[in-house]
Length: 135
Ligand SMILES: [Zn+2]
Image 1: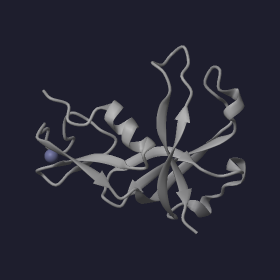
Image 2: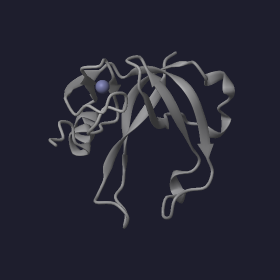
Image 3: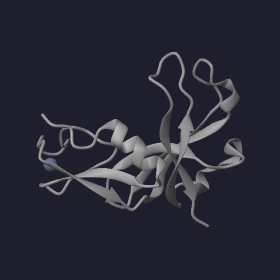
Image 4: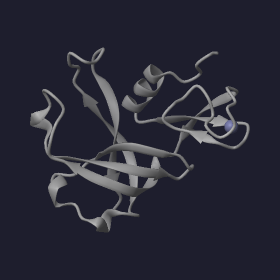
């Protein structure tokens, strides 16, 4: 099986402000990248650029960090329903993550990115999706 959109490709595009995904012949859109369509199990996937737009479906604020990441607290993670269909998890860019309320559910967002610093559990730094609320 040939991986058409690797995690490394996804990471590099995100750093350039592009959200990449995959389109299957069945109509399924995949993001983040996978090797197989979850709807029909096809591996015949086409790389596409997504709009980076969506709406917050759910969120949570974290007050307990993974080892070595205490300085990042608190931060908020959102589950975003992208306009093209798939759901994507990423941080919410806000100065006050502990002040967010349920009122952000359904609010439109656009995707940007942040950078995780590498640690002893990773192979180096990596980009992650970071969503901005659209005013
Ligand atoms: Zn499919």
